[in-house]
Image 1 (tube, one colour):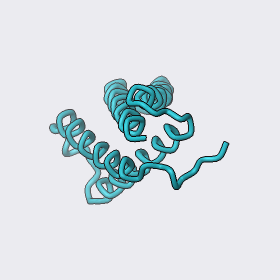
Image 2 (cartoon, one colour):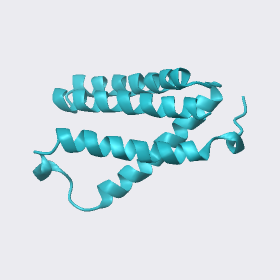
Image 3 (cartoon, one colour):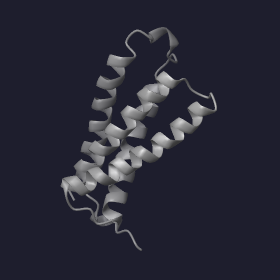
Image 4 (tube, helix red, strand yellow):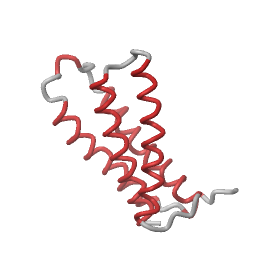
Length: 126
């Protein structure tokens, strides 16, 4: 299987990066608004988050393209599968006590939703 990177919709990758940032900003500002004292200080977390947003959008675009998903629903399914895989990793980490159950639930919901949205966007714009 060969992926033609020239045929990816790079406008969708850019829109997906911004979608990820907007969703994350709303999601985490609502859930973590009273936890400002526990957050890492400095701007690195914001720079890293922006980079992750665009990398995530690009990788979802590659996967949606690789499986020839050409609709919003097909793309959403690919994104949902990605979110479920990430969910399994968080649950495993929680079972070993690496992160709290509350943090696990927050992360699971975040990733399942955003990757489903990214998949839907890339499927729709493919």
